[in-house]
Amino acid sequence: MDNKTITLIGAGLAGPLMATYLAQRGFTVDIYERRDDMRSVNLSAGRSINLALSVRGIHALKEVGLYVKIQPITIPMKGRMIHDMDGKTHLQPYGQRDDEVIYSVSRAQLNKDLMTLAEGTGKVRIHFNHELSTVDLQNNMLSFSHKNTGEIVQKDFTCVIGCDGSASVLRDEIVNKTKARYTKKPLGHGYKELLIPPSDDGQFQLDSHALHIWPRGEYMLIALPNMDGSFTCTLFLPMSGKISFDSMDTGSKISELFQSQFSDAIDLMPTLAQDFRNNPTGELASVYCDPWHFQEKAALIGDSAHAVVPFFGQGMNASFQDCTVMNKLMGDYAGDWGDIFSNYSKLHVNNGHAIADMAIENYIEMRDHVNDPNYIKRRKLELDLEKRFPGQFIPRYSMVSFHQFPYSDVYKRGEKQFRIIDEILRVDPSGENIDRSLVNKLLKS
Ligand SMILES: Cc1cc2nc3c(=O)[nH]c(=O)nc-3n(C[C@H](O)[C@H](O)[C@H](O)COP(=O)(O)OP(=O)(O)OC[C@H]3O[C@@H](n4cnc5c(N)ncnc54)[C@H](O)[C@@H]3O)c2cc1C
Image (cartoon, rainbow, N blue to C red; front, side):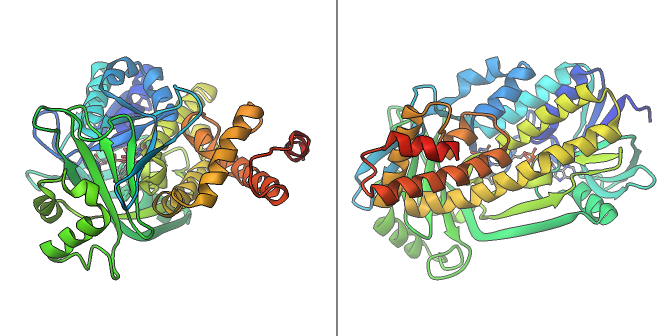
């Protein structure tokens, strides 16, 4: 195979985007995807029905020219709408400015549009129903089993990029070959998708410009709006224990849980019992792998490199940013895949690890802290500091969602800022009277 042809595994969210970047640089791309073509067969697109898209993802979609098509099917969400036990709600804005919002988008539509965009370059072929089963990195050979015929198909390659998601087969082989450091850390919590349909006259039944959260300590329910007036709810529960997916084994237990904990949501969920029974329970885990490549032959992007738990709404955004980073390196090292891949691992692995860690921390914040007076005071102080010290103090959530700083820098800067907040509150526990000279001194140090 010539070195102008690149092989990709997986046509989920990251694969077709990476293929488009490659095609725009003149490469021919073969993508092998285990599923059928979701544009012609009615398939679930995967883990979640909708996703939160933010700046890193939008940047990549703009670079390949798809954002103009996607933007009209997005719904801006300006903050977290917290639902208390008594049904009262209050909005915690994500940022200071009107444009500091994140966007709900349909995973299926985005995935379909990305595939069509890639094929539209005339340089990308997607081979559906091909499941990668084994990889021989020494002899540059991939084996696929054809989902319909069971036939084993062998393909040689020059350079292969794994976009095959969190259970990546290519990653397993890279880990074998490089003795890469690799951990898959289960969260011990899972999720299930449920539905709030539109009202009889087709309207949203909750505020459509917010991400709704019912925080309940060890677990939570969230809801994101869809273009058809519905909300997709996701229930996050421990996998085992007193209140868990294991223990929710009868309709009455589910109904009891919702009546007692999510009383303002249950009335809007006429198909709760069926949805709970019929929809799969997904398990959550974080993947840490280092490096993300093998010589000049293979690399990983997206969840195959760094599956993260979904609580920062960054898995897809981070995956799209991988493609942006790889595209820049392709420009810097003009076709030298050894240099492209080694710099990709060197520059970017720490960012994958940082967002994986921040996403776990955000779960605890969302399910447990958002209603804690101390959290609310710190959050208000963060926003005040951002207003009074523009550019010098940026809340961690904003650095992740509204800026494109590398995640590892965000992590480090965020830790320093948390210490600044500790110090301000030590001096003035109310957080109301910000001492400018103290903050200047802390920011400088
Ligand atoms: C409940 C939930 C909610 C989420 N919400 C958000 C959010 O709000 N915002 C956000 O940014 N991210 C979110 N994410 C994360 C996001 O879904 C992932 O980060 C994103 O899908 C990663 O894209 P990917 O292309 O790497 O993997 P995937 O989208 O999983 O695509 C992998 C593709 O590879 C194919 N494949 C797998 N194995 C093989 C094989 N052996 N051979 C051939 N093909 C194969 C699969 O069929 C699939 O098409 C969420 C995740 C979950 C679970």
